[in-house]
Amino acid sequence: MKRFISNASFILLATLILSSCSYSEPQKCRPSGRIRGKKAPPGQCNQENDSDCCEEGKMYTTYECSPPMSSHTKAYLTLNSFEKGGDGGGPSECDNQYHSDDTPVVALSTGWFDHKRRCLHNITISGNGRSVVAMVVDQCDSRKGCDADHDYQPPCPNNIVDASMAVWKALGVPKNEWGGFDITWSDA
Ligand SMILES: *[C@@H]1O[C@H](CO)[C@@H](O)[C@H](O)[C@H]1NC(C)=O
Ligand SMILES: *[C@@H]1O[C@H](CO)[C@@H](O)[C@H](O)[C@H]1NC(C)=O
Image (cartoon, rainbow, N blue to C red; front, top):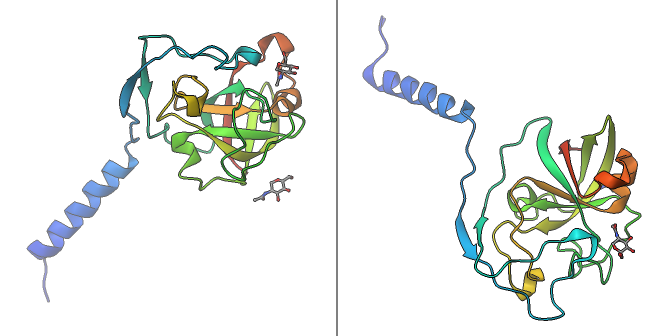
């Protein structure tokens, strides 16, 4: 009977231990690039509800990834209208439809949107001591921006849950704080 592990199994074991270590280390989300802002042509960039417009010459960081997920992933809640003519631009990417501001729907930053994998799935958003379930209908594009397709708005940061008015109401956030709020979220 062999009383020691062979070289081959030792290497295998070492590889397993090393790879499990590197898996438990939080993966970092690094920028994928930068784009130079262009000023919107007249009549473009709907600034309703405090939407940002790109500034000429300003550099904007882009991301393909979002911060790693946990059971309570930290994110920044922003306000968006998914209605026709609202500041969300075209219909939602997941279902090619518009959504009433009275339904709890969200767009997620590119990494969390995960190539449409969360489309029409529900997430639980917690903040202000309350929680609300909302459906993912769109992407908040962290990869691109400052062009006609994105209504001359900057690329989305990588940690955004961009939510309809219904979500803000359900969390009971005071109106003067609508627009930017720290929350956590998880898959429902
Ligand atoms: C956005 O702005 C419009 C016009 O100012 C307003 O009627 C609407 O309620 C706002 N939507 C949200 C989601 O705050
Ligand atoms: C998400 O929630 C909505 C509204 O409650 C529901 O109609 C829908 O079936 C849910 N989607 C999934 C994928 O569970």
